[in-house]
Length: 344
Image 1: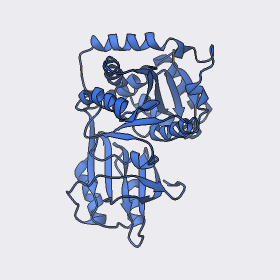
Image 2: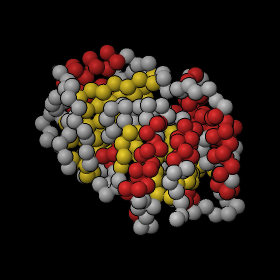
Image 3: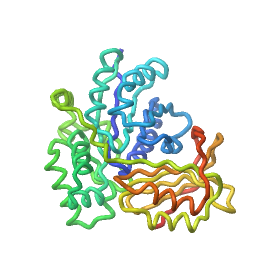
Image 4: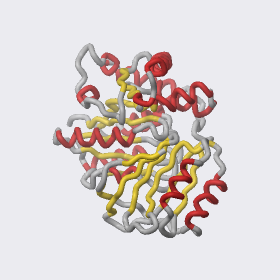
């Protein structure tokens, strides 16, 4: 029986992994390939799955990073997908604060029982944020980003439209210093010729030819590594709304949100509007999409950042909404109805 390829999507919070995942799924659908997806969030709600088509098998792994509380279940999850779904390929989108080394170890362990093989580790790098972090030299965050870059077979330098030439070259130089073996491709919104990822031309994507040796080396290094959680400095706060909120006030909240909040996502309903909106915030930029939930949902927001003031965020939201709900209702699939709209 042929091996089922496993693809890892890595990258810091808000880099564009889910956008890339959507493009990959479209590509494989056109190729008549059945994909299964494992999605991980460090909070207790996963909104990214709402952006995927309903016919794609998705396994959600919440309340932790794959590399710690959930890592022990990764082998079982891969085995279940292999036997029950029988996909042509598996894609793992890890939380933005995961170290891909741990995923590689988990896949290697699972491959002892089922016919799967790690085919490609892709790290999406948000060019503006990477440049900002390297200039500020924020310890744990910087180390985590560097680890994600070092693990990659393919680096997607995303959001390059937000930097001018000299800064792009600076980012590229830093990436090459961290990982001189990876193929690097500049993208905007992760738009890429998928054939460059999955149908490499001999001599063009040379690092892929030596991937097995790279993976063995990575696993060997990790076995010698004293385990520590690089994401311990990352905090999450989940807020469930009990009604509609004022849209102007909601947008103003994100204009004034603390810099320590890197990422926010959720479902919101505005006063006087019977529609639900899926919102995503990353590094001072917000986007919203109108959705049509196929199952009951509760408006919710998840905030992710580094040592931010949870009380400040909570009070800011409660000024808009009042009380919050404590019940936990699972979010379900949705159909996108409108294109993205942006504000800053």
